[in-house]
Length: 340
Image (cartoon, rainbow, N blue to C red; front, side):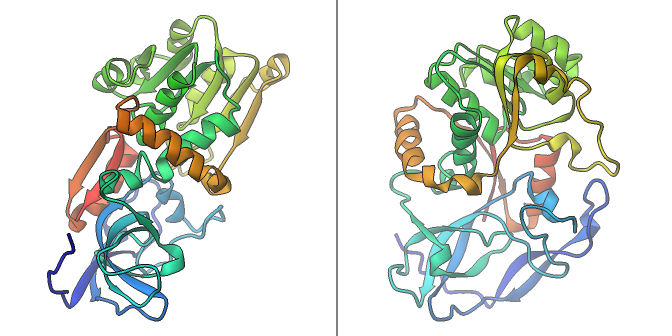
C-alpha cells in the first residue's frame, strides 16, 4: 500500500560535528533539520523506514585512512537504509516501490536510482533487508564460506556470536554440517540464546574468565575455523586452539575500535607456523558476486524457519545515535535497527 501522507518541509538528519577521541560523545554529533530534497533526473526521493547502525561506522568517524572514506564534518552521515519511494524521476523505480540504499541517518533521502536496489516487502519484512537478508547476512555468508573456506566437519568458533553477523555465521555453519560450533557473548542471557535458539553446541560469557581457558573447555579437540568479530584476547585464544590447517576470517575487531593507543597483537602468532594456519581479513564489498546465491539459499532457510534471527529495534530518528552507541556497548541482540 502506497503512503499518501503529504511530504513535510523538513527532514531531520544526523551530522558529525567533531571526530571522537576514544568513546564517541553526544557533543560530537547534532540532529539538525534540512529541507526535504527534490529528486533530480535519474533520482528517487525515499522516505526512510528503517536505518542500520553498525560497528564499522566508528571507523568512519575517524580521519584515519581506511577502506571507506571518513564521514565529513558538518555533513550528514551515511549508512544502510530501506524505505518507500515517495517521488521519482527515474525509469524503473516508481512511487510506492521500496528500495535499499546507503543514505541513512536521515528521514528523507534523494538517491540516484543506480544506487537503489528494489526490495519486496511481501517476500520478507523490510527490516530484514538491512540484516539477515542484507549486507549483514552476506558478510556472514561470504566470510565463513569463502574467506574461511568452511567445509563440512569443521569445528567453528565465532566471537560476538549473539550479534547480527555472528549469530548467522554459527547457524550457517551448523546448516552446512559443522562438527561443532562454539560462540562467545557478553551475558548469560546471550549465551543461553546461542545454545537454545540458534543451535550452537556450546557458548560462554567472555566476562566469566580468560577466553583461552573457556575456549579450550568448549572445544577440547580444537577449532578449524575462527570467525573474528572482536579481536584482542579472542584472536589470541583462537590461535591457541587452532588445529592444523585452521583458518581465521577477520571480519571486525570491536574490542579495539575506541582505543586511543595501539592494542597489543596476539602473543602467539608463531603457532601459525606449527599449525600451517591462515589469517585473512575480508570486506563484504569484495563478495557481491555471491549475492544471488546468498539470497536464494539463506532466503529459503529464513522462510522455512531453519535459520533464526533477532532484531533489536529502537524507535525514532532522535534515538539513532543512542542506538549506534548501544551497538558499541553490545546492548543489541542480533541486528540493531532504527525504525522511523
